[in-house]
Image (cartoon, rainbow, N blue to C red; front, side, top):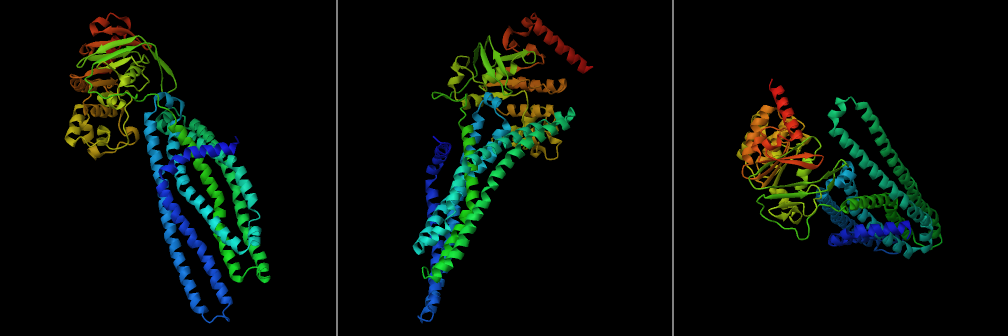
Amino acid sequence: MTDSSNRFETARRLAWPYFRRYRGAYALGLLFLIGTNAAQVAVPWLLKQGVDLISALDQDPDVVARLGYVALWIALAAVAQAITRVASRWHIFRTGRDVEYEVRQRAYDHVLALDPAWYARHSRGDVISRVTNDIGNIRLLFGFGVLQLANTIAAYAAALTMMLSMSWKLTALALAPFPLLFWVLRNFGGRLHARFMGAQQSLGELSGFLQQALQGMDVVRGFGQQQGFLERFERVNEHNYQANMRLAWTRSLMAPLMIFVSGFGIFVVLAAGGWFVIHKEITIGEFVAFQGYLGMLVWPTLALGWLFNVLERGLASLGRVDELLSAEPVIRDRATAREIDLKGRLRVQIDGLTLQAEDGGTFELSHVAFEAAPGERVAVVGRTGSGKTVLLQTLLRLFDTPPGAVFLDDVDICDLKLETLRTRIGYLPQEPFLFGRTIRDAVTIGTNAYDDAQIEDALRRADIIDDVRALPEGLDTRLGERGVTLSGGQRQRLMIARLLMTSPAVALLDSPLASMDFATADRVRGELQAFACDRTVLWATHRLETMEWFDRILLLEEGRLIAMGPHEALMDQPLYRSLYERQQLMRALEQT
């Protein structure tokens, strides 16, 4: 199968479902488009009648009256053309917007379902580029592209039919360069498609670099690496520039050809048309009409290059978005997944589970077995990198947890609907993340289920109500992207307030007090302990304080559970004792 055949088959496979889904709107739009071209093709024909009437002015005394009727019909045709043109554009352009909306919704829903291992292999900037720029190109394909393609076909069919009916010889002369045009379009197709793919991919790389650089701006400045990042950006930007220049060069070769074809047709009709009139092969009216029909083809011919660009860019983007949508989420609901009212009884039996993190690295959990009942408090401790965060995320199925590893209320979490699992488990991540909206939205995550009194109570319990009241707009203060206007401790306390607004069966707390000083942490810890009294709690921490409060402590080392028990029993374990004594020393130093 040739490359063009492959591209055609791919285009048909990707685009046809949307044409079928919106066939009603497209049918109406195309019907009005046919009406537009019918009204447009009538005008030169009416002009022909008028010119021929004027030529016979001395022979027919009723010419003036008949010319009036011709003028009236021309006016009516112009009005009909305007109405049908607006209607056709409304239906087809709106359909392009509908396709854009649908694809963007599908893409956003899909990227939310993709697992950390997938994101480890793909740039977030490239994902953003596909969901924004590529889907914008798809809108042009299904809107302007469809309209212009259909209009070109209809205009050529109508105009050529009328031109052939007047003089097939003059028509053949006017269309002489068209075989060259179609040869170029056919042979440029593959090259143009490849150039568009390269340009879109380089844009994704540029977006990814910018996203990382802007998010890490404080680190870049703090280490004095502005010049180094500027040089790296220059290389990425140069690659994007070269990709777009190659695309522009390919596109620029097509424009002169379109102008030549249109200009050649007009030249032929002017040069040869007069000869045909002199030799009585066509009338003066037919000569005028012929010019009118040729004029109908000027814009579609000039727009062929633009249309071809839109089609190739749209198909390239459709392929890129389809590639994104075709990525299968590893973590998803089974066909038999069910919903239950979780009470929080937890049983874990993990042995030899290898996980791929978002940073591309792998981590293995092994020999991790424990149980926790509602109302039971379990601490997860260990050195940095021992697997505390990975364990909590595995319980939440943020990683692909195998069957038989984690049970809630004696039900394998792989048999639970993800929505049930994640709405009944409260998770406080180690890295606080706040959307760049208001404090109210940050605490409620945009829902309207809570009033201001409930929000302020949660903020009070998280020991941040005074900070919020000190802000000029209180709850309506905008936080900036990722909560950049707040300190690390303030962001963490807002995350805690968000958790305190909920009522989960299981609470997974990942170093919730890490960014706070000891005094603030003591106040917030009391509220979290009260919150935890009637639910299952797993509390990962490197701060070994008030360990006596926990019913059981899990000690992890390199992904393995090496000890488990209450605080007093674990004090005989060398690693635990070392971690605990180091924490007590740090607390004493801060207090002095």
